[in-house]
Length: 486
Image (cartoon, rainbow, N blue to C red; front, side):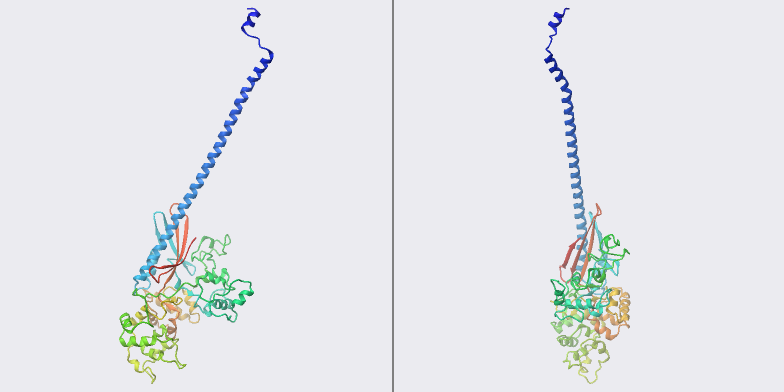
C-alpha cells in the first residue's frame, strides 16, 4: 500500500486540529474529578444536616422526657397533698372526741404513697429530725403572742432584736427600751417600717432590724421544713451548713405566724361562743345542770372572763369573778386555781352559790372541747397544742418552771389518745393549781393549721418536684393559705 493510499484512508489532520483534540482529551479526566469532589462535599453536608437533625431530635426527646417526668413528679406531689387535705377535712367533719392523736396517726398513714407514674413522701422536721406527715403549726410558738422572755430563749436572740420584734407587731409607734419604730428604720435608709400589726409569716421576721436570714432560717434556706441536699453539703452550695444530717431550722423551728385557735369542737360542730350562747344550749352541749349553765352564762358576759378560770371546775366561784372587781379581782390569772380551796364561803358574796355542784371531769372536758370565748369572726392567734408541742418549745414556754414542762410531757406520753382537754392536765400532781390557771391562755389540745411539704418523684426518671402548702382545716372545704412549688 502506498503512502497515497494511506493518506486517502487516514486523513492527515492539520497540526492545529490535532492540538485541539489533544487538549480536549486531557480535560475530560479533570471534569470527572471535580464531579467527585462535589459529590463528596454534598454527602458531607448532608451528613452534617442529618447529624444536626438527629441531635435536635434527641434534645427535643430529652426535653420531652424531662417535661413528662416533671409532670409525673408534680402530680405525685399533688396527690400526696390532696390525700393529706382529705384527712384533715375528714377529722374536721368527724373528729375523734376520745382520741386527740388519731388525726396525726392518719396523717402519717398517707405520708407515703404512689401512683402508676410516681410516688410521694411528706415529711417535716422536729428538733432536727425528720418525721412523717405535715408540720403542725400549733406545735410552735406564735410570733404574735410570744413574750420577750420566751424570745430570749431562742438561740442567738439579743435584747435589741427581741424588743424590735415586739415593736414590729405592736400597734403603737413608741419603741421599746432597745426596740425600733418607724423613725429608726428611716434613719437606716429603709423604705419600710414596722407593720404595727400581726406577723403574716416567719419570713416577714427578716424585715425586723437585726433579724438576719441565717438566724431566722438557719439551714432551712427555703423554709420547707425538710433537709434538702444543698442544706447538708457544708460549703459546696448555699446555705452554710454543718452536713450532720439534721436540719437546724434556726428560729423558724420554734416559731410560726400561721397558727390560730380551731373553732370546731370535738363533736364536729362549731364551738359554742359562750358570750352569745343561751343556758339551754349549754345544758344540751355540755350535759350540765340549768344552775351551772346560768352561772357560766353570767360569768361569760363579763369582759374579764377567760377560759382558764373554768379549769378548777368550781362554777360557784364564777359569781365572784362576774362581780365588779373593786380593784381586788383575781383577774383569772391565779384565782381559778385557788377557787377549789375557797368554795365553801367565808362570808363573801359567793357562799350562797357554793350549793351549785362543781363541774365533774367529764363536764369540764366537754366545756373545753366544745366552748370558746374567742370571737368566731376573729380567731385568736394559735395556742400551743400540748399533744404535739416540741419538748424544746415546752421548755421555752416554761423556762422558769421545767417541772411543769416535764409533767406535761409525762402526762401526754402516758395517754394513748393524748390530752383531750386542758382540764385533763389537773390529773398530774406536778402541775400546780396556779400554773393550771394560767395555761388556758397559752395552751390548747387541737390544731387548725398544717404545713404540708409533699415531694413527688417520677417513676420513669427519678426527677423530683416539691409542693409546700399551708392549709387551714377550720372550714370545709379546707383553705390553702399559701402554695408554692420548687
